[in-house]
Image (tube, rainbow, N blue to C red):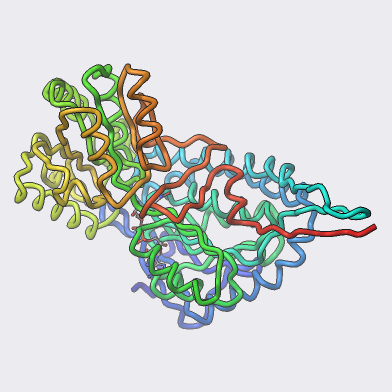
Amino acid sequence: MANQIKSEMLKGDLYMNGQWVSEPGQTYFESINPATGELVGICAAATIGQVDEAVAYAHKAYPMWRDLPVPERASYLLKAAQLFDIRKEELARVMTMEMGKVLAESLGEVGVVIATAQYMAGEGRRLFGETVPAGFPGRNVRMVREPLGVAACITPWNFPVSLASYKIFSALIAGNTVVWKPASEVALSAKIFVEILAEAGLPDGVVNLITGSGRTVGRRLAEHPDVKIISFTGSTEVGQQLAEMSCKTLKRISLELGGKNAVIVLKDADLDKAADGIVKSAFTTTGQRCTAASRVIVEKQVKEELLAKIVQLTKAMKIGNGLEEGNQIGPLVNEAQLHTVENYVKKAVDQGGNIVLGGKRAEELGGFYYEPTIIENVRPNDVIAQEEIFGPVLAIIEADSYEEAMEINNGTIYGLSTAIYTESLHYANRAAREAVSGLVYINNGTSNAEMGVAFGGMKMSGNGHREVSHHAFDVMTEWKSIYTNY
Ligand code: NAP
């Protein structure tokens, strides 16, 4: 904990009711740059009382915000989109400093925030209801979407601002107010995000930022009776806990969770394209994406050729500080994640895996760097083929046929993203049908999302809700049916 503040470091307070606030004796936690180990800044660790205060402000602001016409709510998002564009370099740099992804990726992520603001502003014009033919004379029946109240948005560190924008902007356009709890690693990026919303003129209390540990802040939000929606992205383990905690107050809860994504490569595939898609999906964001490719399931006949191509492309990737141009793979987010990755690689070797590339820290770089790692001789039920690693580690698994490859693909607890490379219309279409995944990519890597397309996972990767598209309103609104006898 850091309570002595140097003037040059960034400092994040809590944001509630339109004010940046801290209380006497407020505790602060540190944000550390994983590339250098340097302190980026400090952020307020909210107390339970402060969480309650933020919820109370959001609750108070709700009727006013709900009653604003949607185009007026949309105008704040459109203004914010312009401001994000003006401050994109600054926001992207802070993101890279806090969690390590390379600057080009951070800038791309701010681009997603801008697109989401514009998209959701437009969707506001399409919050359509339904009319139903009435069963009695002199009556009409209609159904309308209504907001629920306070939405608590709890987000992870790997996409510090885009995931928040999916949640916050869909909540706001639907007429809910927001309390946002970002991951502690990226609390300063969250601060800039909220500064921009404040600058866009959002009325007081409509968006509130509460930083601090998930165990304190997240838990309180999940239990709070005035929080009506929990929109969570993060690990399956925490998602399960939140579901349990929030069921007592019957909250709407949306869970976007972990994955164990695979790329299936059939023997008729274009192997150059497959290798390119695999390497990009496996190692961008240092493998710390929910949709990262962590398994390649390849037909035996082409395994050696594909592997050689993957190794060649991976060797050409430059690891280093994300702020320096030309680097393509940054550090892992923190030391704990580095240890997690090391342990998984050790387990893979213990179970008979053979390291083809990497398999160790990039110690010469300092920071929390791990070399992009490729492991062959992995069997479908090995630990490394079953559990989410969240690092730059790719397991190569061989299969005798499409059918076996699909069985392996579906043989984990997760169901987020599946890719298949094949020239066969037959197998491409079967994969689209047979993969138990919320996302299926044909001749593309596992990691890609387009605005307006439902995003989310099956099985333990989520609880059936979807983001990014208008389907987000299935979480952010509820139906009211109105009968009028005239
Ligand atoms: P995490 O540990 O589950 O944390 C996510 C958020 O929950 C953070 O804000 C965290 O706060 C908070 N939290 C932690 N413990 C909590 C608790 N007991 N009660 C309430 N809140 C709690 O996940 P992460 O390490 O940040 O992110 C990586 C995970 O996110 C991976 O599993 C990845 O697959 C998943 N993810 C999924 C998607 C998707 O769309 N499906 C997208 C991106 C990431 P603090 O960390 O500040 O304590």
